[in-house]
Every structure is written in C-alpha cells, then in structure tokens.
Length: 428
Image (cartoon, rainbow, N blue to C red; front, top):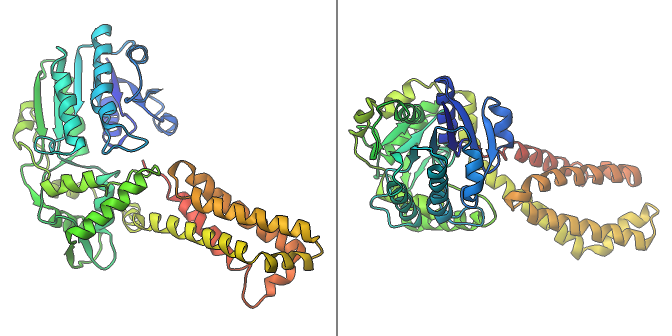
C-alpha cells in the first residue's frame, strides 16, 4: 500500500514516515525542500511541492498509485515564507479535491489539540481546514496531538529544550499553564492504526497524555533529564514575554521561523489541553511525560543542542555587529586605511579603491548574515574575506603580524566564530 505523506520532512512527518516504512508501507513524501530528506531517507519517493501554492494538477501527479494520504503539513504564523490560510485551508482544499478526482478515499489529518478555544490565526485556519476536510465526503480521520515530544527537536520542542538548558536559571513564560504531551512515536503509531482495516472514520481524536503538568514543571523535568543541575525557575513578566515575541515576529520577516513568536506564546498562555481518553478509540495507551523521558536517555548531543540553542542567534547578531562596525570604521577612516596600503607600495587610487571595496563588502556581509536565505552564504563570505585579508596583509604588510595591537591575529576568532555559526544553521 502506498501512502502520500505531506510534510514528510518535518518533525512529525519524519516520525510518521519512519513508522510507516517499518510497517512495510511504500511512501511518497512531499515537502517544500526535500533535497536533504532525499539523501537521508532514500527509500521514500520524494516530491517537492508547496502546500500553499501547488495546484490540483500537481497533486494528481503526486497521487499516482497512492491509496491513502497523511497530511502533516502546517505553519505557525504568517510571514514571507508561510501563508497560514494557504497551507491550512486553500492548499488542503486543493489536495482533497485531487484525492476525490484520483479516487483516494482515506485521508488522515494531523491537526492540534489547542485550536478549539484559540482566537489566533493559527487556530482559526486549522479549524477551517478541519471543517473543509469534514465536508469532502472522504474517509477522513483527524488526529489532534498535544505538545509533541520526540528524540529530535524542532520548533516549540527545540525551544523547550533550549530553555531547560539555559545557564543559571530556568526562564519560563506562563509557567503555570497546564500542558499535556504526546510522544512522536505514539502519534506515528496512531497514524498506522488509522490506516488499518476497520479503523475509525469521520472522527476527530485528541492525542494527549492523561496527566497534565505545568509548563514550569515540564522545564524542570527536561533539565533533570538533560543532566543539568537544578536552578531557580523564573516566570518572566508579561512585558518581557511580549518584547521577546515582537523580536521573534520581526525576525520571521527575515526568514527565521522562531517558536518564540506571538502565536506560540499565545498558545502557551492558554495551555495545551485536550480529551485524554480519545486515544482508546485506536486501542492506544499514550505514554506520560515520565514514561517518555524514561525510555530516552539524554546524550551529549542533546545537552550540546540545549546549551547552544540561544547561542546561535547571539552569534549571528554579534557577527553582524562586528562586520558593521568594521565597515563603518573603514568608511570613517579612509585616509588612514589608504595610507596603510600606500606604504606597501600601492598607488593612492588603487589603495582607495581597495578600502572602499572592503567597506562595501563588510557592510553587505553585516546585512546578509541576518537574512535566513542568505545567511549561510554570508558566513562563508566572512570566512573567505578574512582569509583573503590575511593573505593580502601577509603579502604586502607582513610587519602587521608583529603589531602589538594584533590587527591580524584578532581577525582569526571572527572567522572561527563564523565557522561555528555555519555548523549551527540547520533547523531540521
């Protein structure tokens, strides 16, 4: 049996695909960018499609030979890279229309347990999408997980791990909010059972643990699981939380999809709840938080991720500031910078040209490193420019290596920092 999994390269979709493959299903995986996924999971027939913009014709091609669809695609908040209504409503409508044309009846939708009472755009579009599916006449099943915990992390789960690893304190927003969790493995098992003969149809099932814990206690347990010592839990005041959300919202327009955006904080404020007994319809006994953590010993990679989660944006901001100041200083000190090169024997005109070109490159790198799409290229450019600067200085002004202020030596840490930032760029 071939199953089309939409959002197959995401956190939830990846676990669903792995579980289905283990059960002997053949998979067609869909995502916006599947280049890395194609290398990681070669057993899947990968197709690059955008849920928000792909038309019915494109879906009909992807549905060839498919007997069922599992939709794991989703977006958190509108920004230049994400269109909530496009993903959750219009894209879903086109996909289900293609299913009806192709004769694909079984359709499992991964929704969210938080959307019933939510007033934000995420909740509204998710509800609208679920309603669209309910009106199609397909053999549908909607699964609504709580907070999904997985061995790998992305989005909100990555944020929680980063907060749990914060040095010196445990910062929390809405620390008293009640949270119900579900393991990614249990969610994937629910999908498998939903594809079995005689599985329930036309139902909406919440997949949440029987036990609810406060967000603060969840962070405390995650920190202990990581092996870090106890620190005070600090419930951040609302103005600080709002400021963090505004900064994250602004960063989203540069392509950075932070889980600290206002929608996520609004979801946390209302808690993550749901009907704890729904999983029994599928014959599932969902694991509790303690059971989830007990079967997954934390590793050095988990601890390293937690420690570097908030370090990555700080490093990018620091590098941007470094190159911005470098460019502005060069612009304000053209005469001195030109004199350094003329002493080496270059003509004044050529020296001035080198200085102005360097200023332009520095300022461009300072801006481009802040944009998600160009950040990797900017980091690589910083390393190459630094190496070119050192090579040129060694050729024309080798005496600067012995300068007591160390102008050449001090550029090496910046290049190494850019190299580290490159290694931290992967999101999923």
